[in-house]
Image (cartoon, rainbow, N blue to C red; front, side, top):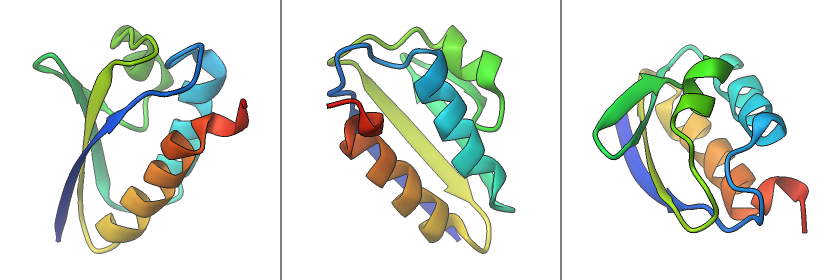
Length: 89
């Protein structure tokens, strides 16, 4: 199974260290391979340093691709986290 979705970052600080750590925590709970992509650069969604290298400020777009048996579940949880502004507002 493969899921691909693009999200717009709405939180004030964008993809900072705490938000990246939250994404890694969710991604790591699942068996699916998780890839984050921005401007053609792809990284492992289970790597906090990788996510931080994408340098995503507020308003930027990030595409997440999940591949595996639990791809739909991981995508739903990552989407909820991003859409919920990482609990910041």
